[in-house]
Length: 82
Image (cartoon, rainbow, N blue to C red):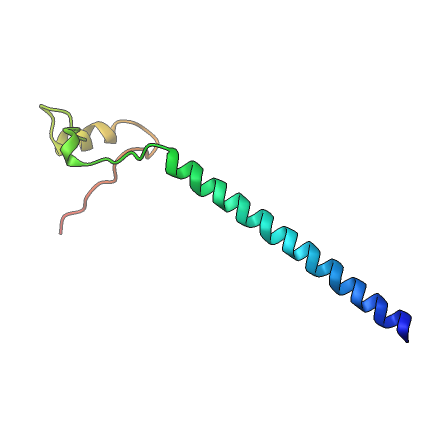
């Protein structure tokens, strides 16, 4: 009976140790991942950057006409009027 209780105690100790080590490793992984994302420059696409999606001199209609001839269903989807 004593040996069986000792075996359960060792199994509990080993499993708690393994789980604790895994938890610490996961916390370290996410910490370094967070720090790496924090040091990267943040890119934002906004209207204040003077970047337009439609080139000057062209309209949305011109872009739709160009996309229709690009072949095999690629490009902008057509808008359906009711």
